[in-house]
Image (cartoon, rainbow, N blue to C red; front, side, top):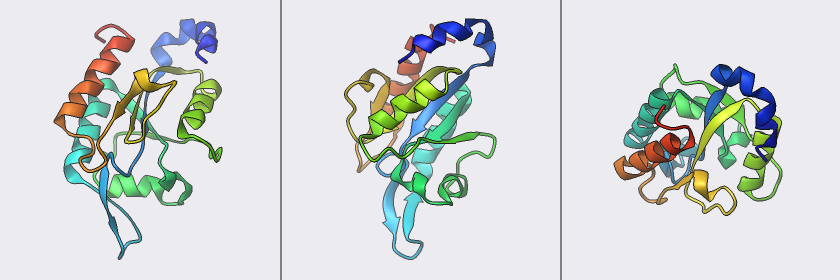
Length: 157
């Protein structure tokens, strides 16, 4: 999966740090019948903001909401800092979400380090995942777990 990484070592300073982000159970804890979409939780999105700013993370959306034309607006309108870039979304492969992330990593070799925030368990990429409780989302405990996971990937930078 990461073998292409060797070819671009000379570009190390230009590589991206990526947060693969699910919505429901991570930053959204409820659904609005009026809006017909998930509602972003203020506390959860603040932890995402803090994490992205601290590690210069760009977001790739893995949520099923990625199929909606307003998937980026949901985050920004929900409190995602406008300075945090949303690179896009994983390709819909109609299979496990983990396979979509693997394909994204294969297709985007400029990624230096990454983390996955999702309330569903992963198997092959579990060492890169912070699994949230769907009733709580990302909280302080999960934020610190994410910090430690990111630090392990490249020293303390």
